[in-house]
Length: 115
Length: 113
Image (tube, rainbow over all chains, first blue to last red; front, top):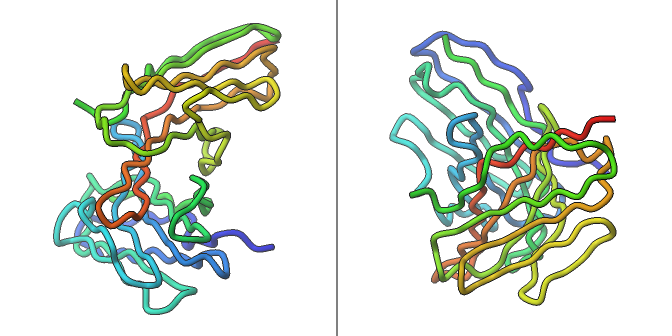
């Protein structure tokens, strides 16, 4: 079975450019999460969708970040304009049901470098 | 203060050793607890849940002390393949009832021959 699929796996861009990260959750999973991981801050929850609806976006750093989930099989995280401090690994994860057992299924991550 | 705090390590141990990691959390309303494992440059994966009465899964034992807001993971008979970063995870839940997992920054374990 296919797991969570993220693209691109690696992206290097210049400050000020727009970055779009993509995620395809596991089929049938109704919760989707975007996390950001850095050495200093670890894994931080950015936003959480349930049944395609954003439930908690309190972790989104600022207006430069936006996330959408137009359907059950696709989500995007956009950064515009990007800044060097946005450099991190961005993980997408999904889970199969609302009240779950604690298991999030993570994608392999998108490693972003902003120069 | 961080919501979930862990000693970053690294813990360097020989094969066969027993090693224990600790974690503290700040939100007393936290509902459930987990340990995840993350290999170098890979995604995190669930290792085990942590139950109030303590629980064991093979060589791994997890314990929870709600009064002290403290979680532990014990690994017996360490294997080279146990080398990884171990993430303590707390489910804050919320009024909506939806899960909100907060991750610690992890404890790095290195098992040597």
